[in-house]
Length: 535
Ligand code: GLN
Image 1 (cartoon, rainbow, N blue to C red):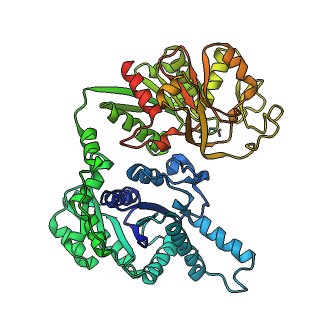
Image 2: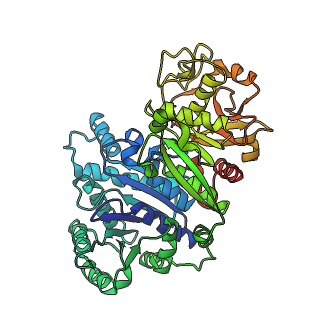
Image 3: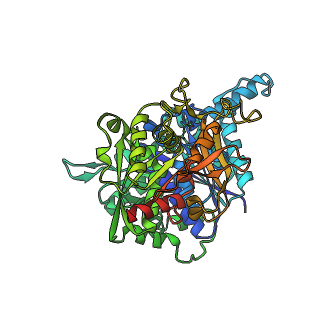
């Protein structure tokens, strides 16, 4: 069947969870037997999310094919259990760049280049391209920001045109915020009405309206909004604040949102078998007998969004072990200043990915603490590089050991780029640029990594510039305490390291968190939680 397109827009304010609504709709369509792919249109003029500050924008999610994207793609992968690609992340900068490059090549034959039709045509071409590449039954497109933003206009105009060109193949759903006034103790529908009017003034009529509200919404409010939207009442669906985001698909199911959409498209709603999701939510909300305390040591204070996928992977591992997660973000700079005492109450420590020098010495102290006190430790990317530096300094006594990212003049650059290592590995092609996307890794039999993964070859996603410096391999191995248990098939790149005499000390150069799923947690996180429970 021709791919149907569902566009999710937002109103009143951003940060309402459009990504969760888009992903949950997809989840419902999957449950009814349809295949789903997703795409996010971001209005920023950036070309990709790689250069956006994660403290401000949340984590940079990496796809298997190496695109650096918005954290919403993580929701899609977790809710839909699909692997997305470069096609899934479109930023305005990319669209403008493509148009300007065409203009420079003279492809517009001397015509005036304009937002309409050139930018909008480029947007429509991306929709077509994604439909062609994926052949999915449904393509769900989330448009970042809110309706009415100047920056997002070209996307909405492209959607308007696309819907006219493809009758009954495009549906728009709108998510807006219903505020509550404390003084008069009432829900106000005006902002939602205004955002619907904005959408309609752009020539777009939504088929469903979701109303995000922190307080109970009465039928009369829904009726009022339905009247303004020109929709039946059942097409206006309240979205209350729930215990877990994984409950949203169940809420949409109850409201028959998927059925309404399928009806609009003239498609059947096959009866579905009981979904995995119901069991997952039961498990998440069910009582737990035990809990684990995990410290995540990093430099960002608003760490929930910054490390979203890591947090979700930790949670998923706890659900699988049927225990509660007590997760604290520990500011690495505090450890630099006042030592590791704050870490005493934790059953496990995680140092996630990161860049730059801020907080690094505190993270290294935390790793030393985990190593010497035998606290379960999981290091992710930077967390592996810093574990190497800690071992070099404190066990191998290589004073001043560091990464060339922080100190190019260090006497022992145990972490450096492949280009910097070239004197030993002349034909390396990794130097200079970021290693992005999935790469293979062979796992040594008999290692902790092998016990965790239970397979000899894995593929994991990367996003980093620096690598273990191979010049130091022998020195680490000779101690008998250190194991390079995961190495690239060509033998050049260290991917996993672990300590031999430790209950659980393992660190990887890649980002396993991106591959973790709520009902299929990543084995490295499962291992950490299991070890933390034993601790
Ligand atoms: N800053 C390190 C590098 O570029 C690690 C990056 C990361 O943790 N994602 O290699």
